[in-house]
Image (cartoon, rainbow over all chains, first blue to last red; front, side, top):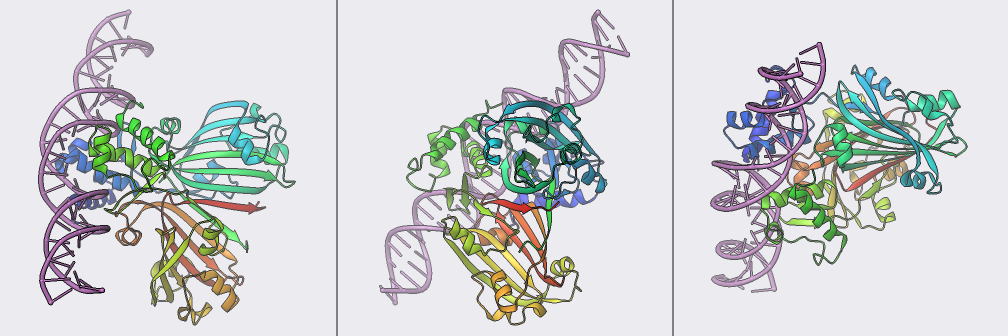
Length: 236
Length: 236
DNA sequence: ATGCCTATCTGGTATATACCAAGAGTCTGG
DNA sequence: CCAGACTCTTGGTATATACCAGATAGGCAT
């Protein structure tokens, strides 16, 4: 079973990764260098790297190289704490880039919220970083009636905070959907990884206290950048 | 970008997979056959297959072959509906195998539940199938004081159902943790896949209404066999 | 200083080939 | 009829090698 050489390789690399100084930084040596050092081919070496990637110990940036991964981010998709807040709370450095805002119909959002397919939405697409690594690409579609001048604001912060603060909305009913996926071309590019990289998709559908549709969003995370945690009281 | 041949291959195979009759069944032709049919090498072909595997369209059974995957199972880890019930509710065929039961201390369970490390637990390990495909390997550790004669029962059904029915427990406080992982040797073998296959780990810690520790469990799913859904009311 | 270009580094994709080990079915001798 | 051995098929692992394309950094020209 574990007599496969690439698994030994995986083990040895895993050990090296324990020691922060082993590679003199966050970056791993080039594949060709590692392959030579371990007296094997790049093909086999890459198998070992892929294994460690699956374990969340290392990650790659498209054609730039391999890097040791920081511990995953704890994330509770049922709470509406802002990204910036919970990233900071874990001693990490958050950053947000707004890629696009517009107002258009969007079929999946309409379907999820039970609205006609030609219903327009305020749409925000953004990319979020932890410690300067892009880990999340997300799109949000907000029902304009709930938040009329939404697009005039600033979106590097918490959208839910604004919905509560500026429009007094309570995000009462939510439905979540988590699914293991492979990143599409666009998300992959935004996150600086190769298309087809493993990701985790989170979709949320939100209604207010009066059961009016408020928002639909899709998040695409690098699959090992986060650990989902949920705390529940008495849902029985 | 998409001028990579293996991506074209992926597309063509994806199309074929739409048509249930394309391969005359749930099983794909052997890699060597497919490679020849598409005039490429097994190496490249396997890249395309791995891609489709990541997308959840096909899966493999260790050294047996590739199979087209059924749609993922919807699963709400916050509800305590039994596995059998919700699998049946989705028109699929559930099955459960009990692999092991014993009573022993278990450090992770003790830590999660806030008990001393030498605290013994009733331990159940089982494997669960959907439509005869093993998709889940799970271990449960129950605090013996909460459910004294637990191990004398039958465990192919819902454990939580028993905890409620036989001991009147309410599972009031739960904490969930979801993490994308690679399956270890034991889980992989139980699920009939190669070690290192992508998986999804679900850990649950449960306390009763009086905040007494009740149970800790670890689930290891084939990563694309399920779609996690959660519905929440008013957690704000 | 600035902007462009180019050489070079990196990972990404691909071919061709070989052998190993577990699964599955078959054949055979009791 | 059945257990056990054998064989064939399948995916799993590995070597060796080549070329492509994006990322990067250094140098040159403006």
